[in-house]
Image (spheres, rainbow, N blue to C red):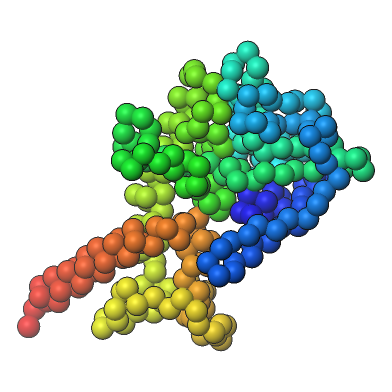
Length: 271
């Protein structure tokens, strides 16, 4: 759904997307999607089998994807499991582009549109210690990717790029972007958060409001409502909700630093 929303937000003319909704019921999640006038014979771009066979049959659709990817800050890259059967794509290898039976261009399969998070210190297999391929579900947010100073590769950290220098460079760039998120973006937001929430010296820095009414009349120095949904603010800075633990840790360090600095200043004043 996030990948679909990212493409929808580009407003690329002539690029059609399905309706999609998440339905949560009794502990289960269902992805509901509208039926489209496509089938296996209408596939003209991308791969439907994990990069074994790739398609690049429609220059007009590829141009539209490149237009959208420029707005998303995604890089063109070589994709496919085999170099002799690879192609250049501006999105994830397994995003499927179809020329529908009605003559329109459709995109489906958006799970890997955004680049993955790659730990700066992975183990030898490029996996976390529990052995899970986290690149399949730990994706960077589109807000972060669009603001990053380099274009990033959707297929970094995966086997959907053939072995070679392009794959190594893509992995290095996304690894550095992950480091920037962890070590720069999150701590910087932690520095701003006390002002955004108007914390007082006696406030608990972990007691974040998560669902409070909008009070637009009460603005703080950042021009942000004093009462807001934390998750929305975190997402707007390109920070995933799974990093709230990192944010709390950085916030605690920031508050400790400010308190120490304030105490030092007050103790150094002449009586």
